[in-house]
Length: 208
Image 1 (cartoon, rainbow, N blue to C red):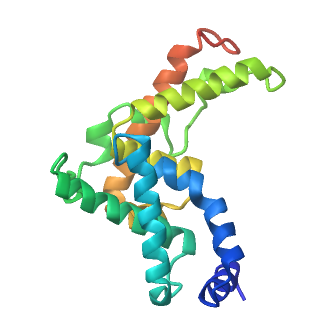
Image 2 (image 1 turned 180 degrees about the vertical axis):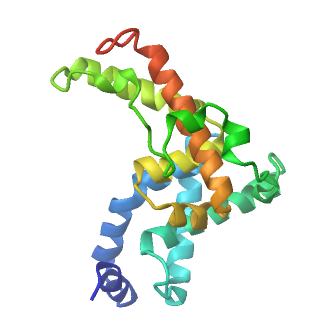
């Protein structure tokens, strides 16, 4: 029996410890994802709480076609899209343009390979692994760069690079095509890289 199947079995049996463990495993990541959709921490927490209520209500409908984590994150993203549409603060996600990477990203194709990985890491990634102060500064720069990204790009980068989800899982969660996911990811990574390179005057050095 797979890990997901075992967890689902325990959840359906009313095992509260299994539910608590599931929340502990995904809560922080869900807050981060929610924050790409809503404007404040309180709203993000409300969105995550609503997601868990839906997860419990719809648990019997989970068929295992995707990973449990992907299913949960997909519920969160769907609730967030519904809230955005009701608030009329942004256009629906369906209005994202289908833009080819070569035309929309320009120099990005020189920086990333066909799978979206960096051809060469930014200079900031060459920090001395023993220098805790510089590592802390580096992570602060990464977080600041993430926070500056548009919501869709931030969500794509967070799901792929922070959570380690596949392209297919990210497309499912964000309800976008593979082409759109690739554009969002490339643009987000390129902006983060530029921020890191600006922060690193020379290899191993990070500006405060």
